Structures are given as C-alpha cells and as structure tokens.
Image (cartoon, rainbow, N blue to C red):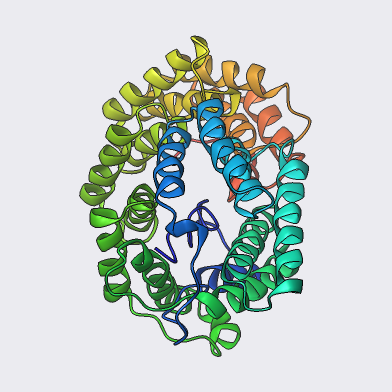
Length: 406
C-alpha cells in the first residue's frame, strides 16, 4: 500500500474557470506526481502497519462525513503510536483541509494549514538528514508540498503553486512504483492521464507549457479512476468525486454526474459539500424542481445548525433557489431569496461569487418586474464589486438594455 494517500486531497477543489497558464501548470504538476514511476522497491512504510491502515480508514470515513472531532481523535491515535513521524501532522491537517473546502471564500484556516504542512516537511527533512533514502520522509514531504501547492493554487498564487507541484513530483516519483495490484494507486495516473489530455485539447495556449510533460489519454485515465472508485480502499470516495467533476464539468454527462453524486451522498450523507454539488448538477441541466428539493434541504439543515452546513453553504442554497424561481417566472419569490442572500453575505468584507451574482440576479428580477431604477442601481453595484465570470459584462449589457426586453 505504498501509494494509498497519494492523490488524496491535493487536487480536490474545482477546476472550472482556470484561465491562467501558471494555474494549469500547477495543476498538471500536482496531478503529475503519480504517473508510473521508479524501479526500486521502497523500504517498509508506516502505511503498511495494519493498525495505522485500520485507524486511518476509520478517520477518513469520519472526515468525509464532516465528523471532524471524531476524525481528529482517530488521527491522534496514529500520532501517539508513531511519535515524531510526519504522518502525525499530515493526518491532523486533513480536518483543516476540509474546513477550507467547505468555505473557500474564507482564509481563516490557511495559516494553520500552511503551518501543519511546514511541520510535516520539517519532520521529513530531519529523517532525510539521517537517511537520504527514507521512504516515508520522501513520501510525506511530497504530499505536504502537493497539498500546500493545491491551496496556493486556490489562492491564485500560481508561481509558488507550480513550484510546490514540481518539488512534490520530484519527491513522490522517488518513492512511487507501479503496482498492478494496488487499486488506490490507479487514481494518480488516472487523473494525470485524463487532465494531461484534456487541458491542451481545451486550452491550446498552454501547449508550450505542457509540452515537456508526458502525453495523456482520456479514455485510459477514466478507466484508471473508475478502478479506484470501484475497488479502492483509502481513495474510493476521492475517485468517485473526481469522476463526478469530470462528467459534470467536462464530459457534460447528466446521467453519470447524477449517478456519482448519488454515490457520494449515500456514502457520506453528512457532507454538505457533496450535498450542494448534487443540487448544482440539477441546476446546470435545468432540473429545477429537483434542484429546489436539494437546496431546500440544504437551507433547512443550515437553519438547524447541522454540522458542516455553514453560511457559505446557505449562500449557495439561497442563490440556486432564487435561480429556480427565476426559471419559472416567479420573480417576487426569487427576490425574497436574493434579499436573504444579500443579508447573509453582508457579514463578509470581500465579494464572493454568490454575493456578486446574487446582486446581478436582483437587478434582473427588478427589470422584469418593471422596477428599472432599482435594477440599474444593482447593475452599477455589480460593476463596483469583484468581477466573477461574466458578471461585469452582463451588468453593462443590462444597463444599456433592460434584462428581459426584446
């Protein structure tokens, strides 16, 4: 089980909207940590220990269900068993990672997460001073660099993200080996194969940057990811999640997207991140009644203060419920949701996607209702906010010509 943690969460956030070549390079180097690798058989690893294997899996299952305290307790068991080993701070940081994922608009956990990855790297360096071939030191240093690079990429720190990704690849390739019996191992090469083929195909301008990397194969990549999704031990959930992303964002396949979302919801019913993803799939394909059902449930759980259902999750629910009302021309109801969204997002001192797009949708609803002065006020406010997607372009267009006019 040499590679069971290898692509765990280092690439688990959304890929849509990447427009900067450095971000694409960071993604490919992070995904590229696990093509088939070296010939040498690695030494014994802590990951081979049956107790570590059992307890880590229990912790992961709890973590995916957003039972953070319980997951941390499992990971603490491992830390106490292998004192001073880099696996301790590495596993403990995974709860921080998921808290970041459920609210990417917040940076409150960034400093603690970076500190944890620094602690992992420091422990690895100490072991490498004694033994330059220490398997676990190289492995966990590569993973720490990969996670740090992933967060830097999410924070648009492209150059440092790419640098971390390259260093991660160097370390992980030094210890990874192809293992046809390891189903978890198939995920890393699968992700690389799929995205290394997709990115130059979809975004030709990055081809000069990616020319030095091995070519990908989308069909092979999907087969490898499915293998982990079906037979993986540690990374089965992760593989299902990546398949959902691929079919949702790039293959535009509604049936497969719903199927994988249903699997995630069934396996981890307490995961608000997977819950909102299910609703967004229905919204993308205009299945508004099903989207409404999901997001009403999300909003109810937020109001009940259910674990993992934070204000960021509620913003998404309010936004998509408003979109659903707009789709059936119930603009008064849409405005009610949008004004609730505005009140909720007022707590923020920065402009999130849903805060900006909610303001734009307000203007559109006011336009249809004949309240042009209110509508133009909202469009001008959007132009003073952070540009998300086509928000500024739409605001300018609707200032010139009211939304819904012929």
